[in-house]
Structure formats: C-alpha cells, structure tokens
Length: 190
Image (cartoon, rainbow, N blue to C red; front, side, top):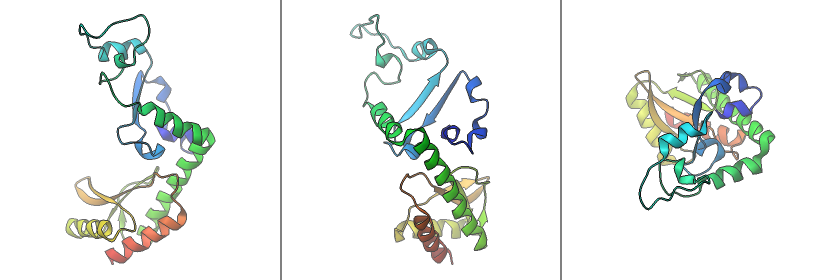
C-alpha cells in the first residue's frame, strides 16, 4: 500500500480506490512498533458491525467510541506513532524514503547477481530474496550473517526454495550501509 505514496511506484496499487476495504502494516516502512497496522473501509458501519461487542459494562453512547472499531476493547494508542511518523516525513518525505528503499533493494540484488548468486524475486519494491545454492548453504549463510552482526537478514522459503530475505525499510539506510552489508554477506557466502 505504501508504494502508492511514491510516484514511480504508484502504478503498483492501481485500482486500490475501488476496494471496499484494505489493510496495511505500518511497522516496517514507518519504523513504528510491530503491532501497528491500519484497516480502511469504505463504509465505517461495516467495520463497526464487525468489531462491536456488547456487554452490560460497555456503555453505548451517541458518540464514536474507539473500542467499537478495533478487535481489542482496550489497547495502546498505536495511531499516535503512525501519525507522528507520517507528520514528520510528510508526503514528499514518505515518497522519497520509499523510492530510496526500493533503489537500495535493487542495489542489493545487483550485487548478488554480479557475484553469481540467484535473486529469486523480481525486485519491484524493497524486498530481495536470494539463494546461495542449496538449502543447507543458504541457511548456513543466514545464520553466519546474523551471528557476524553487520546486518540482520532472515530466512524464508520462496516457491519451495530456501532463501535469505532482505527487507530494506529504514529511513536511515544508506548506500554505504548496503555496500557494507553486501560485502559482509558475500564474504560469508564465499
């Protein structure tokens, strides 16, 4: 969903406005706490009908009650962190960050390809899936990269193949960070 904020990526969410509802994670690209997500609905009464619970101690007033629109009756105010991130970045800052993260993901992919490793996905956003050969070697590289500490990359499976998953999502990530991380990963994989 965040691709829609970046002019060069907006085509990836074409037709989104036609949906009755959608949900997105704010954690990675906005660098907010893990359980920060958003659900948008065309008709708020559908959301309220799905989420409202009734109990004698829950008073139904005429005003909008936040607990009528979320799965929990009480929770931390995650909206504040999301609002603060969006307010501080602004639309232009958000677009620039998304575009930069996508370019940096492509930089990772180019480095892996040049070194002879298989990039398994088409890198259109900020995710890179790379295999270092067989599943055992790929898992070994992931474990050693995590232990070495220059960067952190997790493991996954893509179409039945073990892969390292790289997610470039921080506003602070630079080309130098990618180059340093790529050098460490390639050294370990070699």
